Image (cartoon, rainbow, N blue to C red; front, side):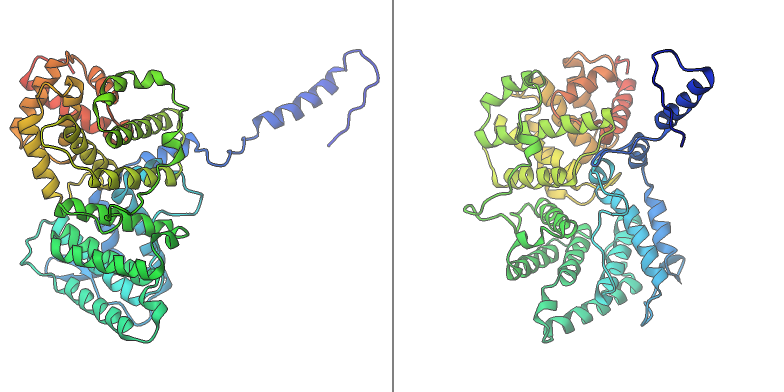
Length: 461
């Protein structure tokens, strides 16, 4: 690198200027290093790519395919599993997580080389139960097979996995009985029972998991393993909604609920964004008003992150999930009141953004039935502002119901859109955002629903 020394104030000669310019531009053309916690435009774009369910199904089948009838299934694991099999399953699990928790994987910042799923490792029992859970999901959810169509390969993995876990629980190794690996196995069994709609079995597994975590010292000991902890929370919340029951964690009135993340309770967002909420919040119960404002801030953060291509820390996402949803499940108000209307709406909305898998309406019959009854009876009551009524209907349409099958919902949406004076999808989007709406997740499905109403109305969408 040449050194240039000048002792006069005259302009340097053209050749020297060329050298200086070349070295200055070398620094300007160099790619700037990303600041920690920031996401580049390219990385944000990658997060937005949607994964097809059939693509995941094919990837699982190719891991170690075997044939039974006309379908490919998992086959028995050898005594020594090849390292390539572990690598392939790890790769597929990373992709599958983008379907299981799209909000976290699309908007949650994760350091390079890290994935948001808890690893199985080389635990044979865990591999068998994982194979059983995946095959059961493929049969019951993707292929819509009935309960009496037992899959012999899935049954074999279930039996082998249970045999290994019973031997572990009957053995002398006390630490192994309540290890992360063992808890992960019970969690997989609970999740498989959940999407198989075996409510009682799912609840039994969750109660067993609750006892195991207590023996470990409570959920706080899993703070160093957030991937496992998040799935414990999601499974607990999902089964509580499926069964219309209390969750097993934080169910005691005297038990402290999780704190809200600092990012959703701070006052950095200008109050201009909450002017319409100020007309609504004073009429709500204190704790419900708190959840409403927290979720409003969370949606604003998510939409701001999309616009600026900035990701959110995962702790903010799952921290908001647990703090809001466990509070909503502990509340209860008289049917038809504004409080109960918004509690149900918030419960469906948080279920949709935190628990619902991409493009799938997993079993949630109790919540679906309760919400359907609520909308049909109370959606147009005078105590509910029109913009809130529209939001309540749309949240049901994008998460629990099909507008093409639930004709009453299409009529309600069309009527409420006209009542709000909506003439374009952009206007409807603005109204939905004035309540709660995450564009990255729902703009596409929301516009599709609005477009489907054009044939039945004079709206220009």
